[in-house]
Image (tube, rainbow, N blue to C red):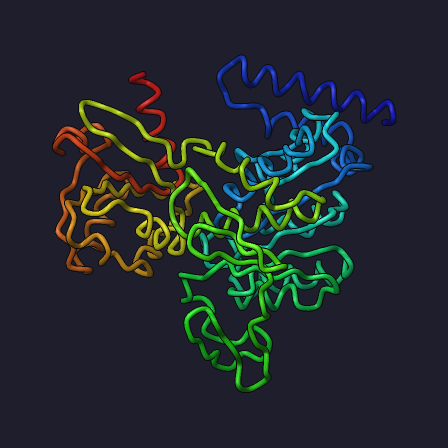
Amino acid sequence: MPPRAKLATAMLRTAAALSRASGRGDGSVIGGKVGLTIEPKLLQLLAAGRRVALISGTNGKTTTTRFTAAALEAAGPVATNSFGANMPTGHTTALAKARDAVNCVLEVDEHYLPRLMAEATPQVIALLNLSRDQLDRAMEVSGLAAKWRDALAQHPDVPIIANADDPWVAWAASGSNNVTWFAGGQRWQEDSWICPQCRKHLDRFGDYWRCTSCGFTRPSPTWGVEGNAAVTPDGSRVPLDLRLPGQVNRANAVTALAVASAFGIAPQQAAPLLVNVKSIAGRYAVVRRNGRRLRLLLSKNPAGWLEAFDMLEPMCPVVLALNAREVDGYDTSWIYDVDFSPVRDRRVIAIGDRRMDLAVRLQVNDVKFEVARDITEAINVLPSGEVEVIANYTAFQDIRAEFDRVN
């Protein structure tokens, strides 16, 4: 690399190390910020000559990135930001920390995908889903899909792995010349009742969808999930022995296998490595406290909460945690898009900064509930045994911090 880039990389590593030593974080953001300040083209220079996969979508990108990194380890070391930091500063740090890794997989915030496409020269891009998320900070789904479509049109020959079940993703990817479709499912459909192409009503029959006005129709997927197995393009069924729960994570695993296949790694070789993914930055982690066994689930938007309800163990008490800080989005009205009836027959406790907002929403949904100040108080009023915890972003971090403090 040029001398300036070498200096930028050295200063990046120093800044990241100081951040970790001072307990301020893992250094991914500050390290990348320092490096890019010294050499604005550092991300592009670090990605040059390497095989890069980009993973983007509203939900599931962290898990899919972690699955993909595990799968690519079949071919050697992998550079990845699979524990977060999904903007250019984090991408730059991830590439700088693993300079010897030829294969790279980067989780990308939906809004930054066009920039990463231009700077990282990806070998393959996986598009998971698009749904509303923090609308007080981000654009509407239609605007984001158009942004993706325009960016993909500038790189029409880059291989795309896209979710055929999401109409907005299908529309964004349909102009590309090299698309592999997977059946990723779309449990949350409230953002896709109109045709992305002509804006007329979209007919839906389970996962299948079509527009009777312009003919835009769900593409036929070549990758899918049947039970606990991945279905590959040649019709083979590859067992999925996962440690993460839910149908959505089986779909995430299949996406990872499709990406690995684009790197020349056979699904039969990659699938056994996915069992090594057990927890992702605390997500799905199990914590034992005072005779209770708590499982932590992160959900940040209506689609995420719907998927989390699908993962709950039968009849377990559930603690629901809601904050509304800057990174969460200050507007909590989105909780009225969530159907809380799946927890109606459970013991439910609401906690978090905005627990009273959550309490009102639960009452509207005819869900019996209790209110507690924090996770400690919630635990103390519950009996011994299994407890499920669903929290949005900063509420989740508060709970993790509390458990770390006690430990």
